[in-house]
Image (cartoon, rainbow, N blue to C red):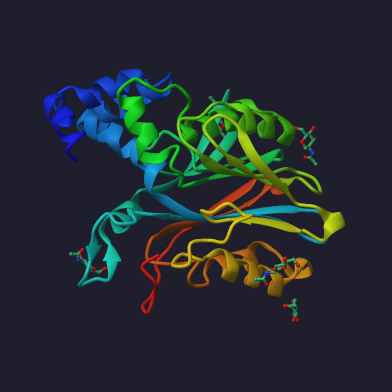
Length: 310
Ligand SMILES: *[C@@H]1O[C@H](CO)[C@@H](O)[C@H](O)[C@H]1NC(C)=O
Ligand SMILES: *[C@@H]1O[C@H](CO)[C@@H](O)[C@H](O)[C@H]1NC(C)=O
Ligand SMILES: *[C@@H]1O[C@H](CO)[C@@H](O)[C@H](O)[C@H]1NC(C)=O
Ligand SMILES: *[C@@H]1O[C@H](CO)[C@@H](O)[C@H](O)[C@H]1NC(C)=O
Ligand SMILES: *[C@@H]1O[C@H](CO)[C@@H](O)[C@H](O)[C@H]1NC(C)=O
């Protein structure tokens, strides 16, 4: 706080609008448009858009059923440490976000190009589908080389690279196959580390790309030959043990294993994502996607007590 407080104080009146100008097109223009249309100060809209890059904890899974159809599910958990309401046993920000959940349909020449589950006013993508081609979600990867540090360095103009959720949106718009999406997600230089969870439209096409800022560290793929019929990511590298206070991976995998490939479907995937602690007090929405039908459906969530804060 000693290092950054004077800087923020000194630039309080201009740093955030300045940041809006630094963002690439069309994100910069969209953010300004949102500020104009809503009457919310530009700086607040910028912060709203940057926050997700830092505070999201999630569960994402791509699974292949026995017929070779690919299903993709995710819980978006947001608001950790941003104010716990003792009386309501809830996270203040998570509660405020729930009414902002929207399903968006991006069209060109009146044709759907891609769809996403978003928060109104947020221009990046954390969850999306390119119908009949691929599905994509992003989970935060906590790492020393990124997160706050990367973003502060970017504010100071000392870092280049792309915002993670701007890349996912660009990929949803521009990539025209699973392979093309995978390449862009693995090779584009980022501002901070991330996990990209990508599903394709045919057997074996599902992967978790573990990213550092500059490169892909690891790609774990669905492999029917190894009986690996799903890949699942929370917020920890899959080859390491998860943080012991936040192990959503083991119970999620136990659920998937018990469900079996024969019985996996949109509804059993929803059941898995509705099981505590995958469902917790931070969970704002659950999205389920079926690439072959081009379908995306989402649910605003509530975790009844007793329920873990995360
Ligand atoms: C607590 O929850 C209730 C019901 O969900 C809501 O009406 C109320 O506004 C909440 N209180 C606070 C302080 O958020
Ligand atoms: C766009 O498509 C919708 C139905 O999908 C149709 O109702 C509408 O008239 C179309 N608009 C234009 C400009 O073609
Ligand atoms: C899968 O995606 C590829 C690449 O976009 C496309 O050529 C193919 O038709 C798609 N297959 C199905 C079954 O939709
Ligand atoms: C689930 O099954 C996979 C593959 O057989 C196995 O590696 C993993 O340890 C199992 N996990 C749990 C929690 O049952
Ligand atoms: C799969 O679903 C069928 C029908 O709902 C059910 O009878 C069976 O017990 C399920 N199998 C497993 C392993 O859950």
